[in-house]
Every structure is written in C-alpha cells, then in structure tokens.
Image (cartoon, rainbow, N blue to C red; front, side):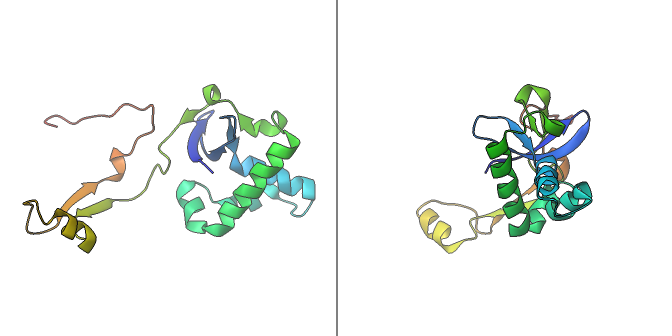
Length: 152
C-alpha cells in the first residue's frame, strides 16, 4: 500500500494510491465502508478515531489503522465508489504533500553500526559518528519548491 498525504480543496487529507494511480481518501473510504455495514452511527468521527487526523497519527495507530485502510481500499475497489463523496480522486485534482508533513526533528548518525564500521574499516573516516539533522521545516512535497536561506 502506498500512503500519501494530499491537499484537496485546501484541506489536508490522508490517502493511498489505488492500482491505477488514483488517490483514495482513506477517511472517506473508511466512513463509506462503515455506513454501508451500518456498524457505527457517526462514521466520520469514528474514521478519525481509527485512522487519525493526519499521517503522523495514522502511523502512530499502527496495525489498527493499516488494517482499516486495507479493508477500505478493498471495499472501494470492489464497489467502485468513484463519485460517491469524492472518495476516489484523480492526481490532477489534488496536490501531493510531504508523506509525513510534520515529522518532528530527525537526527541521523553515520558509522555507528558495527557492520557498517567493519565495512568501512579499510577507508579513513571520522573517529566519532557523524550526525546530521533534518528539521521539520525542511520536509516538502514532491512538487514543492525547496527554499534555501541566504548563505545556503
């Protein structure tokens, strides 16, 4: 499953690509599945509770949200709800965003795993691990401009 974060009519949404490259709005697809099964009365609220408000929450929910997404995608594929509630969208109708728009700060350290150190033993490298920092503001979508500050 290829997960995406996208903007549709100015609203950030979580989704997945279907086999033909369309974007399935996961919360709408899940709500549609619940409505048709008549299991939960307020399906939109339940969809947010299960899937999360954004990709970060979706990932934090783990297997529960992944399983709900799988079932929702299978339901949409089987019933072809292309026009019901804008569940399935064409790529030209949305703007792809960074997959996880607000990931928090990411710190990476190189040459700190024993296999990699052994692999690199023949080469002269730094005595201590090298760290790099990726700040949340540096994350962009695939078609977004990369802004450079003066002096970069």
